[in-house]
Image 1: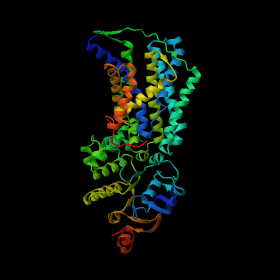
Image 2 (image 1 turned 180 degrees about the horizontal axis):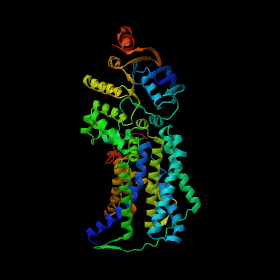
Image 3 (image 1 turned 45 degrees about the horizontal axis):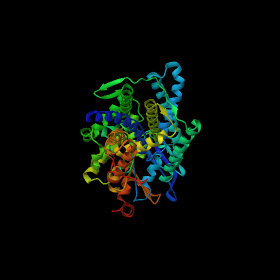
Length: 238
Length: 304
């Protein structure tokens, strides 16, 4: 029996006159890692921004855990456990690591729970604990990505939308970040991963979709997509 | 009077003037920090604060007198009323303009300013009103310098308000959200922060601080009029730029510094008190040319 956590039906968005998403449909099964692949400008980030409510869908529906969340405001969507870690990390530079993490738990009233979650983040990322009172602008790219993921862990996510977590990172850091993604998934978090680095993403994922100029052109099990060389060459770049 | 006495006297004058500037500058800088708007109506909220305080005090004086008890109660009432007015102005005048070009919202702010001071002018016939209190002129004699209790209480309360604000912004989750919004609004939305609510809160706090300064100024100078917010608005803007616009500690520092600079500047031979505005705005021009980011400001400069 399928256990769909997210269902996108015919989603369209416009940026002014630009028709960014031209009716895409896909589903994410609970407990899986699903990846959304495609070249620059294919509409991957826009898809995530539409799901998390940062961009308004012009038509189509977004159903999350059986509830239609299309048109809901971003700050309300967060309360349902659907958390978006945006492209470029968007950490609060000028604020300390601890403050960044605290803001991740903004919707939480329980201070003891906040403390418990923060300890969990620090266990996962010991380097963040070491630098907890430092201004986050001085973190390296990898550490910033860890902070962005750590901050999303503070919200107790059920479904995590990750936008290009490997962007600009050295290969060994990419491995480290992907290990964390896998660990989060094992802890029960469903993951929708947007990546340009198709190889890395498919190694991790259960299922994959390939997006081209605002439409889904290919989908399949990650293993199948990985082996199909024509796909890899045509859409994912080699 | 010896030179020390003059310096000490000017230190006292500068601190009181500076604390008014600082309170008003805080609202300027907080609003600029989050929506990059120079709220030119902000000086008029200071003026309105003084008038609301005046009305509240004239009612309250029958019950609790017009000593400190009456003044403090009037100040709190004025802070709440003007704070809410600030939120209302934001909702009516600024929210619809947020996606318009930057210049449009700036012109809107100027229009709001005109509506406010012309409105008060119409109600008061442009008259000066006597802000009567029964504060006496007791104080402390320091050598040849005399500082009244009123002066000390006013400076003390301004500093207290600034400390409370600083603690709010750095120690509470809502305060941290206010700082975070100045950095990245989208990221705030993704943390579950209702950005519009926090912006309204910022307007409330900024406006109520201006109102507090207005009531204090009424108490200190003993008279109020519809145009009293104009010059202090410009001065507070100068103070915010000195400290680095967008920076809260910068506004506090810039305000106190500008007050002191004016007080001491007028003691320079051949520069009398009538030159103090020239002195302040001269500093503003020099600063904009040589260090536009101010003392504590960020290096990022945006065109208005």
